[in-house]
Length: 122
Image (cartoon, rainbow, N blue to C red; front, side):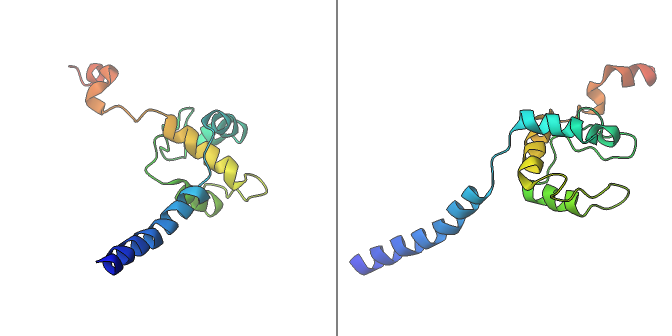
């Protein structure tokens, strides 16, 4: 029984190490600095002042991407978005922008926007 208990504890500890390492590897973002960087690098020009999407950019507020996926995309984007190398924005700065985007409210459902009701004649 002691051997089985020791085996269970050893396996549990081995499985916990990668999880703890991943949690430590992901830097925390500073949403206030992310907002400043979002404005400084003119992200709002295409993505809107609140990340709601706009002129040429997709909606990025409350993004479903994780921080690492956002960083990869910003480094090698698709479409007309310019690439931002680590000389322009560090991974930590992009993590700050990610924290800012996650802090933004999700978009309202069309039924919750009174102006749309007015336009539809309701």
